[in-house]
Image 1 (tube, rainbow, N blue to C red):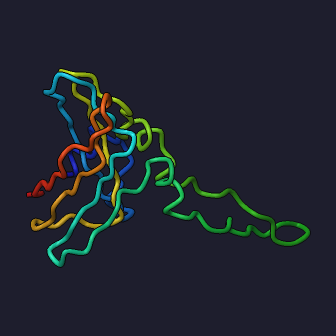
Image 2 (cartoon, one colour):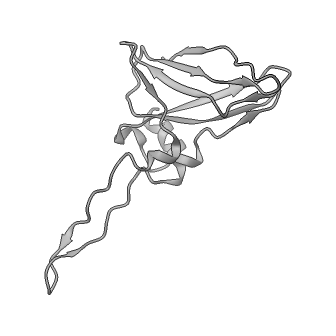
Image 3 (cartoon, rainbow, N blue to C red):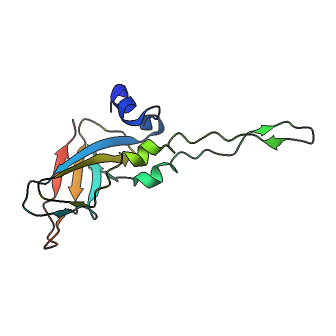
Length: 147
């Protein structure tokens, strides 16, 4: 995401500064039946065909360890100071993540998926695991070029 679009989506949090690439995904169900999305898998394939799976939004906050608190000199020796807040531990990360488990006919759902990689012009989004809710039949595998 460009800086201005990141600011609109995430406020002061800039996931790309911490090695996280947010990718907004919109899914439209134009079929006559519901689609299960709870087993959906998102991957990015780079120009070298190596793939990176999406990191669950609830785990993104742990990707930037805060470390130990600084020691401040005190009257009886050093004492721990205040720890800095992890910038990735913000409500916007989970709050804006893709969360739909089922998609009724004629509806759409959207949200962010997070990847621990930079996005390149030759990357491809690989989507699999979507199923027809009634039959359990898996829908086609999708390859979407990212430009």
